[in-house]
Length: 354
Image (cartoon, rainbow, N blue to C red):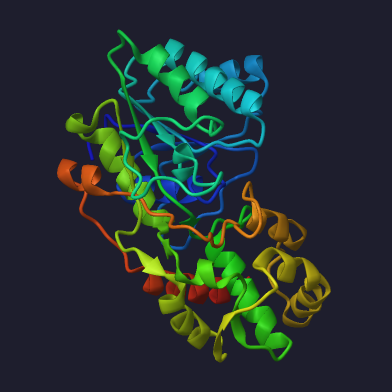
């Protein structure tokens, strides 16, 4: 990568931001990582071009002071998030105001979005979802921020791009909540209580089609789209490239924990996780596990979905069309079953699970 490229990553400690920082550093980019805490990166990532920028982005003057000094930024990767739509929009404006005013070489603003763009959390939606699909009333999880960037970009030399994954899986120390971690904890708990690896959702969820995104693949796709001229001012669905049924993956995942695979059970994943917090605390003490915010995981697993649906599984298909990314030149893919098993092994190595 040309030394004239310098990245600014907003939200550098999340499940999308941490691998973004890692992949940029591995590709030789200088990186400014914006987060309240120093990002904890995986072993083997070079740190000589990393600079941590701690700032509260809800504070406009503080954002201006901290980001205004980063005059060499060429590529902004926006991985920030907040439950409040108003706060999300304010954060975006504070960042754009500071960077655009002080970084004359700004070339691209990249947005990390997701399948909520298509209303996947509201109920059955048109699948496979395509980037050209009309916006969904009531699904404004990304629209306002995208509109802000589109409006600011008009007439400017810089471009914008966006990637839209579903269910990003990875591991970010300090912000570890994602589907792979939730399933690793579920399997660990079932083994501890002498249970089977039963599917914690309905038969319809077991049979529905689903897709997920490896966080490292997503980071590489984001870098690709932000630096490829033909991708300017476009959004791209990015997932692993395979579409699966949980019924087919489930026996493979069960094998990692040495458990017998079983079909659907009446107790859903969020409910199971909430019920077994004391069991997890005991396991964590016995095995000296890495501190983990278990009190948040059941609520995370439910997310914005309404039962019987959850972040883990829906009684309808959740599938995105990757044709546009393939036509523009991104052909990388990951086997989702292998991804889960690799991440489970990493979580064991990081002592997140015993």
